[in-house]
Image (tube, rainbow, N blue to C red; front, side, top):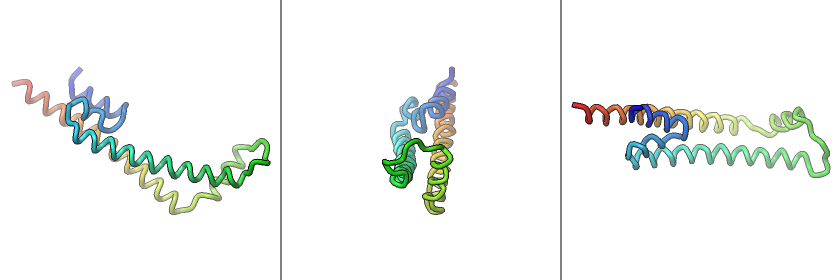
Length: 117
């Protein structure tokens, strides 16, 4: 298997920056990994905040809760600015991941072309 394909596959499966680490491009890999982790941290923080609000509204005295009730509470607690921020960060994460895959492939191809005369 060629280096370029391995690097792109690693970036695709393991996450953005993994292919760069495989190609020994540590600075680019670290930047992509930190960017990906930052986006994931924002998404996780936002999801936990929303879950906390829903659990507070449910209260400890409630028994079994249906998925419909949770869906209604989620729609009531989420604001349009939260929704916009989550969409923006999710799109940014997808862009970073795509850039990581394409860039790892391109660097791998360049390394392969330098190797073969």
